[in-house]
Amino acid sequence: MFDLLVKGGTLPDGSVADIAIQGDRIAAVGKIEGEAARIIDATGDLVAPPFVDPHFHMDATLSYGKPRVNASGTLLEGIALWGELRDIATVDEMIERAVAYCDWAVSLGLLSIRSHVDTSADHLRGVEALLEVKRRVAPYLDLQLVAFPQDGLYRVPNGRENVIRALDMGCDVVGGIPHFERTMQEGADSVADLCRIAAERGLPIDLHCDETDDPMSRHVETYAREILRHGLSGRAAAGHLTSMHSMDNYYVSKLIPLIAEADLMAIPNPLINITLQGRHDSFPKRRGLTRVKEMQAQGITVGWGQDCVLDPWYSLGTGDMLDVAFMGLHVAQMTHPEEMARCFTMVTENNARIMGLDGYGLKVGAKANLVVLDAGNPTEAVRLRPDRLFVVSKGKVVSEQARNDARLSLGGRPGSVRRRHVIG
Ligand SMILES: [Zn+2]
Image (cartoon, rainbow, N blue to C red):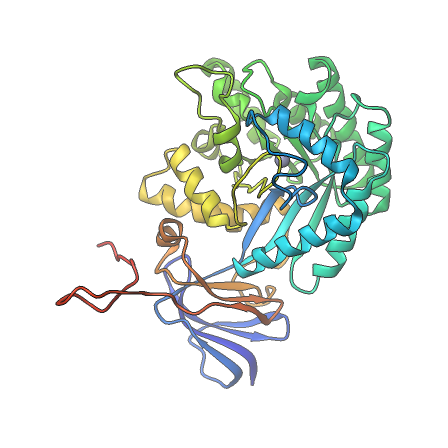
């Protein structure tokens, strides 16, 4: 007898299968006859592995309006505002906001998050808070923490020392922000330094990289070189890469193969960068997104990141990775049927590779994590961003939502509507 049986769902590849769960593992996938303590009927619904967010800032989330809103809407005013909030926020308040965000995440089927945590201030209260959050949510959500020198590795006193202290305290990943150092040279030096730290400690590395409209911000080139030098391929990621949007095409024709050679994985954050970038432009205004399809065409792993929800940089957001995929699809013009479906893969499988998650996916022996969506296939899920009917984490149903059809009163028309639409 199984603990849980999810019957008749449509998997992301279009096949129809039952999924049996025993303890915290998937015990069987296919046509399954057998008893279970609980059976979920997923007939006609999409059953997918859970959403994964490889780029978030949980120390700042749900703080919108504190100490005041970002009037200019720029990255730089956001960083300045956060600098004030960071020093007045208490550990308890940060824990409360972060755990509340994790409730939202679970309800949306988002079960793995990599959060950067600011290490710029000597008090390291964010690190202390998020290590406690990681411990509290561990029964249902996997949280990775990046030691992130928001104000620059070299630009503030003790910037480098505090990153080391945060790693010693238990952060999982080495972070950095080369485009925010004082000079291009110091940015490049920070990349080399951080890659050496990651190699020496055997840790993954994930840098905010070239989040600027300046086409001469080329730290990603140095980053790829240092990844190759230190053997970090496959455990290195770069967030944003927005300068690539504005770079010269000839230069990019050399750069993208170098990124592919280094197996450097890319995390564009479309909700944030479509609002932050291009603020210094008049018209035409640049889109503020890196070259997604062009990198994918050369075999580079590209995911979509959430980055921010209700904080000094972004005044909206819910934690729904389908909002992220929806925006990314539009801004990157990924409208071919294969590209639309790929946007769903980006917030599931691609992001799981970026985070280095073990036991991910709907296969025998994998962790029993899944989400049942009120949609027929991955593209429809991106289009509708529908209710998550069931979310299963580590073998347990952790969130349920009733199907929410609209009731119509139109005389001669159906009495309810769900906005599903099967193509073909
Ligand atoms: Zn970020």
